[in-house]
Amino acid sequence: MKKLILLIAILLFIPFVSAQDKAPEEPKPTITLEALQSRLQLLNKDREQMVANVNALDGAIQECQHWIDQLSTPKEPKKAKEKHEHK
Image (cartoon, rainbow, N blue to C red; front, side, top):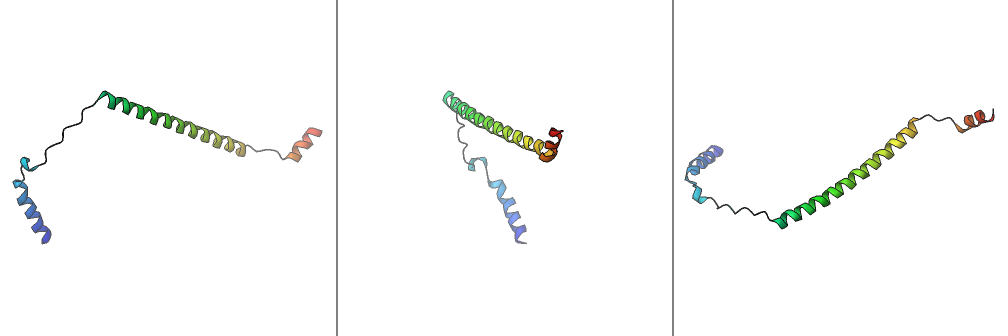
């Protein structure tokens, strides 16, 4: 019941709110050459960091692949290897 009364009160109040009651919009900032150059510098710096991160990830992937290859390749025991060499 309380929810219904609240809903009715809200619906009755809405028509009384006019466009004049709303806060005036703030003017949009103007784009300046300095602001664009500053933004470009920040973007380039971020890109350099991202490239460094990708290179680090590539190195880690290569290292993991190397160790997977090493552990996946069956190796002969050293004693068996020595026997083949002495024959």
